Amino acid sequence: MMVARKELSPQGAKDVEKKTNFAHKVASSSPAQIKSSTWLDEHNRKVGAGSGSRLEWEKQREPKLSPVAHTGIRNLGNTCYMNAIVQLLTAISGFTQDLCAAELAWRTGCPDPATSGNPTILGALCKIVGQVNLTQRSSPVDPSALREAISKRSDRFGGWSQQDAHEFFRLLLNWLEEDFESRGDDTKANPVTEHFRFNVRHTWKCDRCHQESSSVEPFYDISMDIPERQGTWTLADLLGQFFRSEQVEKTCEKCQCTTASVQHEVLTLPKVLVLHMKRFVPDMALQIYKKCFYPVRIDQHLHIGRVCADKLEASGAHSEVPKPYYKLHGIVRHVGATMAVGHYVADTKAADGTWTHFNDAIAFKFESRDLQSPERQNNVYLAMYALCT
View: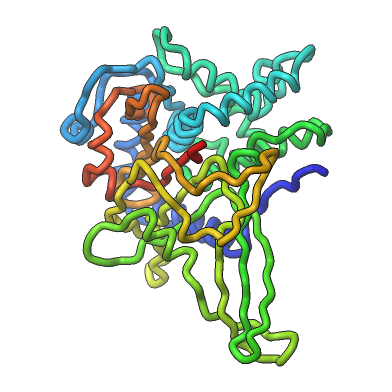
């Protein structure tokens, strides 16, 4: 059967709508922010043109080691969110290899959709992945074909305003799945589903008669709150907070009791685990989203056994259940004070274990110990882990 395209949950849809509305209000209400946005646009144009200019704070905070500028992506004008997500996905070689192999098999004997008059997001993304992986490039990768394909699916993301990187990531997976579904061939595996989809089981227990009921929900990433506290959070702690048991209102079919406890647990393991830190918190009085800078430690190894079911189920084409151990492959940071004014950058790990920082067209290597720098811990927005096999 064809895999159903994932949908945002009702709460997730509300969060996206609020986030978008608040961001527009912030951008239109403050002259100081408008000035900052103009300054950021000027920086983006310089970087997008392949200029060697850099922000002063980047010169001071980023230890510049062996330059690898050939792998950067040109900024087309406030497209740093897109560039950061593409670099993050490229860091997962298993996913991009499956994606590009499936795309190649799909268009065998047909014109390249990324160069025709009606480009697909799938074809355009695969072309960028191939270009990013070239080591002898003399200029940054041009993502114009990808942006053109996106503009045909979304007016907002095809425009020139800054957008949220996490929202773009979720929509990009949706668009890729739609491209695969449009083939009309249910016999071939969908790389997006194979790598990112996993199931979470919710189990309700009546407070009076203790009758249990459960349901299974598909996930593609996990969005975690960062509660205020002294000290540094770990990603394992934030996962524990997300999956903690809760008291909810639910009418029991057996005894009509209206309260229950609900437990959440991972039932199947994704090949790629994407964790989103909710750094933008709503201020209902001001009707804006404020950014929180609470530090989160970026561990290179992550064990999620404590949020998994006692008996994990196999998923995909594999009959054996792997252990719930993951290795870090990349992060995306939001650098800036608000959602409306800021800049997205990515840090990814290569196959040889070295780390590279990507700021649009500019790229350079850095030491893995710098993942724990305050600039990264206070601004990490997305973390992408691959399952250890």
